[in-house]
Structure formats: structure tokens, C-alpha cells
Length: 112
Ligand code: AMP
Image 1 (spheres, rainbow, N blue to C red):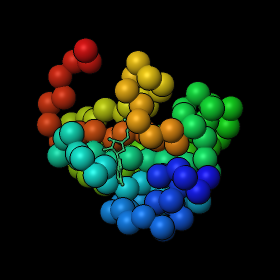
Image 2 (tube, protein in one colour; image 1 turned 180 degrees about the horizontal axis):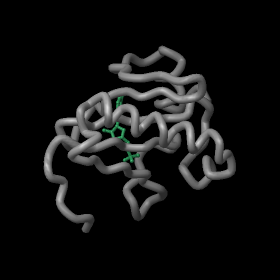
Image 3 (tube, rainbow, N blue to C red; image 1 turned 30 degrees about the vertical axis):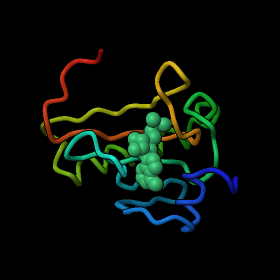
Image 4 (cartoon, rainbow, N blue to C red; image 1 turned 45 degrees about the vertical axis):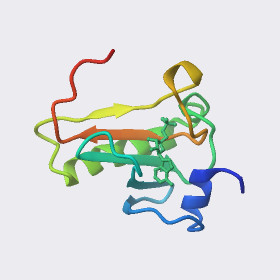
């Protein structure tokens, strides 16, 4: 989708700091990090949110595996990290291309 921000990042049309790539996913640093590590992992194909992505369980599993590898590469494997999929308006989703936030590097506290 030409008007989707993350599709344009995947296509190389908008710059991003790439940290990892697999056959069907890409991971890049969030432009406004909320923690010392804040990486977004996205499917290269367009799905509006994780609910839509759940219809492709193998791809969703690949995305979660890549998120874990990002956390491990960032040194978070032992101390832990948070994996977040904001989905829809009440969750505050702002980019409607499915993405997992990998957050860590500080104590993140409890969810609201
Ligand atoms: P969400 O609110 O869950 O939809 O998350 C969207 C995320 O995308 C936010 O954390 C933004 O900071 C991040 N973001 C927006 N534009 C960019 C960009 N050009 N490169 C990297 N991250 C971005």
C-alpha cells in the first residue's frame, strides 16, 4: 500500500534504522523510543493489525521469533522485555500496519 508508512519503510522509500530482517519480516528502531530498546517488528506484507495477521499463523510465529531475537541481540534475553501489539483505537494504535513493539532496557512497571 503506497500510502502506508511501514510499507514505505519496507520498500526503502522512507529511511529507518534496520536492526534485523528475515524473509517475511523487518525490524527497525522506533523513531520516538519509549525505552532504551524500542524496536518495531513488522511483516513485509501489509496487514492492518495483529488481528488480521493472526489469519497467517506461520507469519505471526516468524514475527514473534524475530522479536525474541531482537531482544536477545539487545542483551534483554535474561532481564526480560515487553512485546506489545497495539490494536485499534482504545489501544492507541496510530500506524495501521501490524507491528510488535519490543521494549526493554529499564524496569517497565505494570501495565495500566
Ligand atoms: P502504534 O502507536 O502502536 O501504532 O505505534 C506506532 C509507532 O510507530 C510509534 O511508536 C511511533 O513512534 C512509530 N513511528 C512512527 N513513525 C515512524 C518512523 N518513520 N520510523 C520509525 N518509527 C516510527
